[in-house]
Length: 274
Image (cartoon, rainbow, N blue to C red; front, side, top):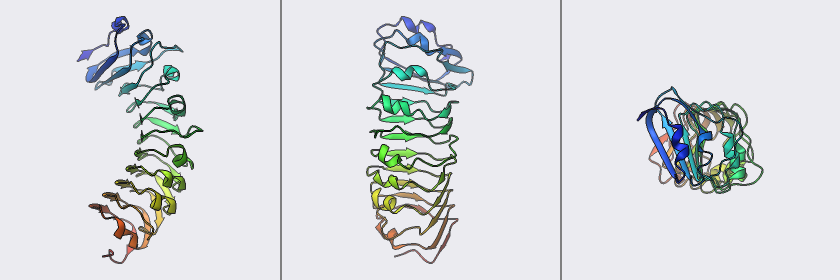
């Protein structure tokens, strides 16, 4: 489909589900036109055209409570403020936009049932978590502009994450020891950052549900596989382009499900434990 999204959507008073992905819309679409659609639960749109932009003008309070919203590739420059009034969101996808500034921690604070938050490929610079623990399952912040420490309490605030992707940013410092509190995490990608130091003992022992672990292109150092490594379910492990030194530790033996391992471009010596 092409052309403009009609403002006459505002007349569809019984509309509950609206999804128009992978089209070629152009022009501006104002979210304000949805304000009176009291039945609306799911709204999703994106466009392959760079000439399409979703806007949200001023402060307005919608009559609906969404379960899911997806505004991918909509040239958004900020998180729509009407989301401040949403309390029942489960899925939020604002990826591939031009959103800058702070991570919207209020989305978590306001929506205790939120499972999925996708903000990859934006221009976010500040990452501050809410004060209380949350049950979020999937978080993608890859390809943003973060260039500071990863919050030390991330594992305590988001202990139920199944997937965390913060790759291709500028995160610095050590990996937070609280990551070890993510007992259910299956997929962790921190590649292409500036993390340094050793892998926290709590991390290599506590994240026993990991299946995919990507640590590539950082400044991580120390022993690659300490004996306490508890990644028994890891199938894909990328540790290349770091500063790991010494021999490959006996912890490698515990990676019984491993079928892809990359430890290239480090300073490791010796052989692989049999």
